[in-house]
Image (cartoon, rainbow, N blue to C red):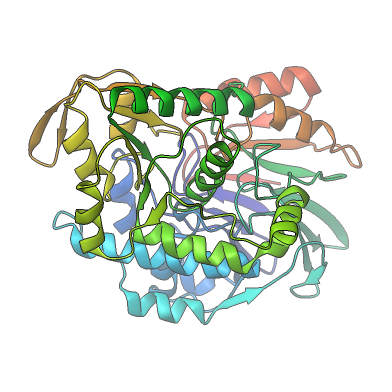
Length: 451
């Protein structure tokens, strides 16, 4: 058996792992490259023949994990794509949004269209958490909750070759413990090989309490200055968490209510899907839903922008106000217009709450850049810019280390450290090797490794 890495090795985006056994070939994820340095790879031919791929395991619906599936199908793949039901619903919306972005960007040749997504949906096969499923006589799988976003899964995969069974564990992205809405990450008993994310390297996140305190301070300052607080959000998970956090903050009396607008049609559609899967929420939010019988993704001063005309209306609403808009890394979407309008004004604020990949506009703003270009317009940053990692949906190093320490029966012989910028992956690999006396590998793009 051998493994090749076709993305998200020594970089964050483009997750795609190829496993070749003596009788099968399968992928774990097939995501888009999203940073400026590597997004041209989206148009490249796959480094394998899609016709030869027997099936795909999809860990979750973020675009950097699912976004090239329609291209895979367009290029000849015709096997099953295994994922949780929530992931299937969410992935459809995320892929449709990608197709829309391709068409709206004159500098990008579309790698697929909505018709290719429609074809792709026919290959999805739903699998529930905790149920062992035999794909064929040689391979069986089980999905555990990764706690990252709604429907996200860790895949346990047992592969039988020459009478011997080997267990592989693919984390996808692991969740940040104690986050609201989704359940905490499930632990795994044992594995021979583990493929683990390293998005934040050795970083330790601020606590959720510190994040909530910072959010409250941002709102209080916005009220005091009668300004606008702009919060760039990812449509999937971060939006829903922020709606929930703002709802609790306003209803607890922590700050007085001010208008909050969500300007992201994709985020609105994703939020509707969240409401469909309340059975996947953690116990605390389930109790709220059951006790109050209300919508946890709504409150009095909150408005979702469903039509383009609504966006124009809320811009006329008197300050102070909060605007949440995509994209989370400020590389596109409706947030760009809000940044152009609000960053040059001193009494406005920008609060960055998501991971910012190297080369993104969000990364530049988070690092203090005062002169930026949006489209063809030069923008002077006079507003306050603050950040927090407390609301991250990714586990930090202490949480990843603790999760890995629970894998003891058997103890993994090799851990592949992926889905992180090169320095982060190398630092994490070295630390895990030192802590647990295990062999760690930071793989290279296109290189194969014998298992």
